[in-house]
Length: 541
Image 1 (cartoon, rainbow, N blue to C red):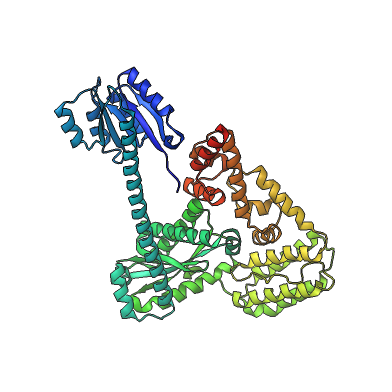
Image 2 (cartoon, helix red, strand yellow):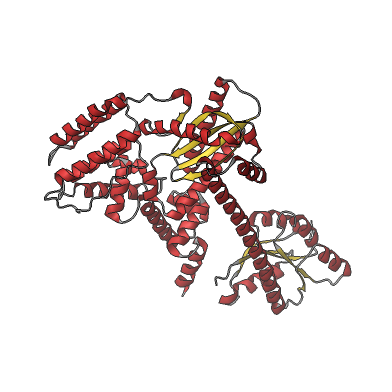
C-alpha cells in the first residue's frame, strides 16, 4: 500500500523554537519523511496569509504571539481549511487556553519547553491517521456519487432505446417518467439526434474505456447546453448517436420552432468541439406532444439525420431543409464506377487517381442517391478493386472489410481513393513514408494539442484511412501513440527538475490535469508526484 505524504507548517514567534522544529523535520527517519515541512511564519496574521496559500495538511503553532494568537488564527482558518489538523505548542498551562483549544477542535496540546520529540511524533502520526480517514470517506462518497450517476445514466439509456423502438407501452413510459421527473413530454417537444462525425477514426483511436468516458462527457455537455435553451433530456442512444428532447410549454410558430432548433443545434455543435474536441452534427424532427408520439418523433429526427451522409462536419438539419434524393440516377453512377474500374491500372499516378475520384464525388454531389442505395454500391466497388488487383499482389490476402457503416459519403470515397492508391502500388511500401512523416510531425509538435485531422492533412491522407493505416502499421492507434510519447516526454522532464502538475501539462500539451494524471498512471503505475518521489530517493542513494 502506498503511504501518502503530509505537508506541515510552523507558526511561532521564537527563532530558537522554529530552528529546533526545522532540525526535527530534517532529521526524521526515512520512514517518517512522509511529514514534509513546507513553510513557516512568525505570527498568526502572517500564518493565515501563508497557510491559505499553501493549504498544508498539518499546522504546528504557538499560542501566545504578537498581532494574533495561535487559537484565533486557527478559528479563522477552520472555515477555509476544515480538514487541516492543528497541533498547539505552548509554554503555558492556562486552563483558559486549554478551553479555547478544545472549543477550536485542536488535535493536540504540547508543552514546547522542553520539547518532547516522542510526543510530537505521536501527534503527527495521530494527525496522519485522521487525514487518512477523511480522505477514505471522501473517496467512498465520491465513488458512491459516481456509481449513482452511472446507474442513472445506464437506466436512462436503456429506457430511451426501448422507448424509440416501441417496446414500452405509453402508460409504463409515463410511470417511469414521473419517477425520473421527466414531466416535459406532456408539453410540446422536438426529438433531436446528435451524431458523431468521423466515428470510425474515434473507434480506432480510443480504447473502449476511454470511448465510454467521452460518450458520458458528451451526454453531459448536450444536457447542460439543452438546459440553456429550455427543458429536456439527452442520453447515449447507440454507437455514434445520442438522442435528446427539447420541450417548451406554450405553442410556438413554425418560425420560432425552427429558430429554437437551429440555436440549440448550433450551441451543441460549438460546445462539443470547444470542450471535448469532438465534431458532431444535429438533426431535429417536427414538434410533437405526449408520450404516444415519441416513436414517431424519433423516426422523423432519424430520417432528417440521413442527410448527414452528404454533408460536411458540424451541421444542423431540420425538416424544413431536407435534401431531395435522385435515386433514378443510380444506373448512371453505377456505370461511372464500372468505367473507373475498367480504367484503373497498376502504377497509376496519384494525381490521375485523385482527378477520377473528384469526378465521382462531383457526380454524386450533383445527383444525390440515398445512402441505402449508395453505400452498398461503394462497398461493392471496394470489393471489385480488390478482386481486380488481388492476383499476384504481395499484400496480405485478407484485406480488411470496408468500414462503411459510420462514414459519410466523402469519407467513404476518400477511404477508397487512398486504399486504391496503396493497393495498386502493392509491394512498393509507399505509405510507409506517410507513416514516417506522421511520426516526424508528431515528434516536432508533441508539445502542441495534436488532432488526427491535422496529422492526416500533413501527410495528405483522408483522416479515416490514415487512422486505419496507422493502426495497421504501428499496431497502435494515433491518439494512443501520441499520449504515450507525451508521457515519455513528461518522464524525461521529471528527471531534469521537479515540475508542478500544471507545468508538466503545459510542457506536454495536455490541457486537462485530471486526464494527464490518468494517462501518467496508466503508463507508469504511479501518479506524477509518486514517480518524482521514487526517482528522488533513487538519486539520493
